[in-house]
Length: 199
Length: 365
Image (tube, rainbow over all chains, first blue to last red; front, side):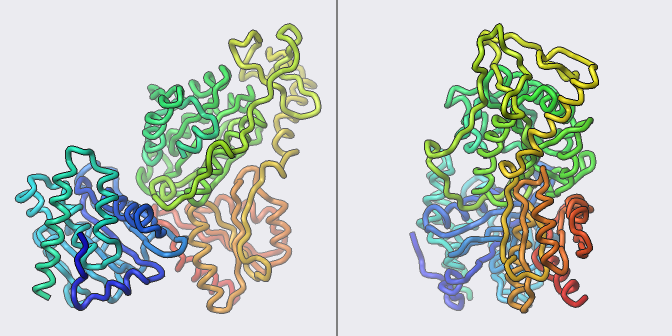
């Protein structure tokens, strides 16, 4: 299930980084914290690397701004929070406004095209994908937005392989939802390929 | 943590869910029934602490987990466990306070509450791990210490540790050293539940094993029945204190990083110690001689070790996610060595950059 990363992005550089920092953000209920756990598990259990996931959320069960920092490294990770972010995923404007800080100069920013309309585009490499609309329309379930986004992220950054990502999903998701998740992963691959055509 | 508790022999959990500790209850509810243990969600924190004490008296290793507001409620019964000498483990995953404060954000605001929260003179053991592998080992150690000293042992985590995931390597449970409470060597008719010989810790008979005795929060004599006799009271109070303060070597644990040649030492614990370690690496790249002293045992505080450290450095920096709690313990033993507090109580972690700035400031002075 692995596709080569996009031209213009040096995925090997990401993989060789001493400390790769990702921040996944959105609003409570979109599955970003779960997405962070899957990403960290993919790196730890299926690629033998070090990873830390450290979530931040408010008291509201659904609807509040939520983020999870995932650090991936070849060495032990001491400080568990992101300070110089390489990859930023955002599925809600309020989370972009609150957590869109600490981005590295060459950070990749991936936002929901409909839900995050206001992005200062001159500073970073910004990709826009209507994740939630696609998850709702093509899969019938908003909660798959995170899986589609992780699949796109894996292509954009090459930080974990799709195979490792899939094995982490398999271990987390109940049997009856596996097929839906597999389709979400493939959808992510297609979307990422189309992003490549544009850039 | 739940796995560590089970591996250490915990077979009873009573609790009332509260963020950011609820994951421990959730995991225990899955794991305990599989090993024949009991999980019970009680009506509140007070009752859950009572249930833990009862289960321990009946012979099970027992624990509960909570956060600040719940810890406040458990404290009365924690005092009972101190007085009646009931082994148990209490986890407090610290969040911002006072009151309901910041339910989902980290803090180290309950350090003094763990030390002095229950009323009356007492010694207490509190452990503060700073990563998840260490959380496993300190949880096992908490149960061992509780059993060895017949005392409540508090595990102080914060929301960052409570909610994060990272890579851990865990031992085979069969390789763990496990300490179980010492049973009486005398028949039931000769058993004095609070009599000691050779150590400050009396042998403990579990309920329903033929030994009948009285357990009370009142000051008691060797039979366990209440007394106001000043000599007996003084002896009890001194023994309860001495069983912990005379065994500091067996209880105190700490880690030193880069202190050999350090001019400035950071005293940091829990998740803040992780920031401190990164700041030290960066400061050393700038040529500063800096190291970290990290108490793993917060109570009893490693005062002797910090005093020794203070006599070898030019300054001590104490970063805490509170308005200054452990810093008072450091100042108490630092002599004439300057102690600089670095405090933040806004629900945000202290980043390495904040500690680095403080180090540069100290270096210039």
